[in-house]
Amino acid sequence: MSEENQVLQRQLMEKRDRELGNMKSYLVAKEPETGEFCIESGALMLADNGVCCIDEFDKMDVRDQVAIHEAMEQQIISITKTGIQATLNARTSILAAANPTGSRYDKTKPSKYDVALPPAILSRFDLVYIMIDDPDD
Image 1 (cartoon, rainbow, N blue to C red):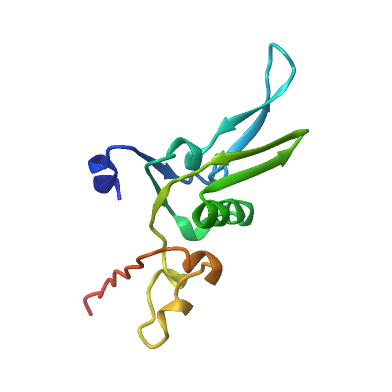
Image 2: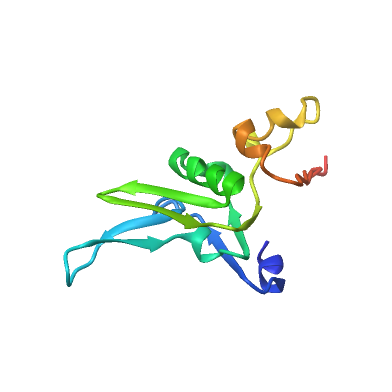
C-alpha cells in the first residue's frame, strides 16, 4: 500500500496506531483562543477528491465503520456534535488492507467468513482482492 500511496497524486495514508486510538473521520475540538467548538478534518476529508489508503481496516472501531460506510456510500460525512451540525465532503476513493480472521485464510470456507468486516461495508468496495500466503510445509 505504501508504494501505491507514492504513485497517487492526491492521497493520504492512514495507519491505525493502537496507542493513539482509532482512525477518525473528524474531530470536534475547542478553539483555545475563542472557546468555540470547531471541526478538525480527519483522514477521509483530508483525502477529498483523492485516495485514502487505510491499513488494518479489519481492526477499525465501530464508530469509524459507521462514518466510513456513509463516506463510501454517499461521499459525505455528517456531523452532529457539541452544537455543530455539518455535512462535509468526503469524495474519497478508499484503498484498504485487512488481515483475515485468525491471521490466515481458510481455503475450506467461503472467503466472506475469513474477513471480519460487516457485509454492508464490504459491499461498498468495487474490487476485493484476496492475497493468499501459502506457507512452506
